[in-house]
Length: 267
Image 1 (spheres, rainbow, N blue to C red):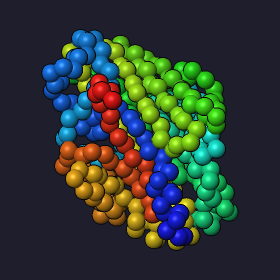
Image 2: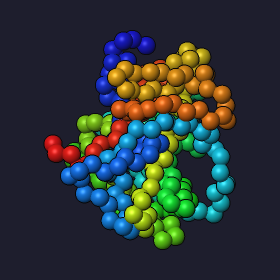
Image 3: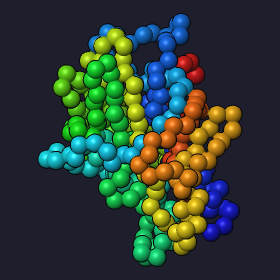
């Protein structure tokens, strides 16, 4: 594997631009920014910095009997699959590359392990928790073609008194996905959104041990910091103190980052 592939892979990474509160608490609304209404919250409001907490994503009640479809979105660069159960990205094929893992027989590179996904969401309000993976969403389309023009997928669902809308925007020549969301019924205190980046990527290299050694969690504030997965204790809560400009998970050559944009900012 040469340096050129590394530079290209990092320049054309699948960067996820999503809603605020990257496992962070909300920030008091600054003057000049409109507050959310009493019965709803736009999950694109500014987020404050707080510790990043990493926990076992397999914990929780097993999900049984929920209907699930997948919406495939493709361009010349990628083929993503998004589940209507929870709105997670459950497949991420990077079409310009092939997997070098022996078992893949040089198939198109798939980053996500079976049964895993990116952007699993849990919304914690006052006395109320909404797990997106317990919500079956209705998709605005069965599939999308972003080869020649931008495309948008909208997912709508309900959980108790909450109405949830997620919007995913794709462009032809970039791996990034911009996601915005809106949840009603949270009350004046709003809520905290927890976003999952999965448990790491599949091995796609000829040397699994080398790939595993260089896989981990990257955080950025003033400078980047890598925490290898091998340094984390399985099934033990680990807290990383923020604030962070962004967070990401990486393998040797590929990375998925989570960025929080202030939708109220000018320009």
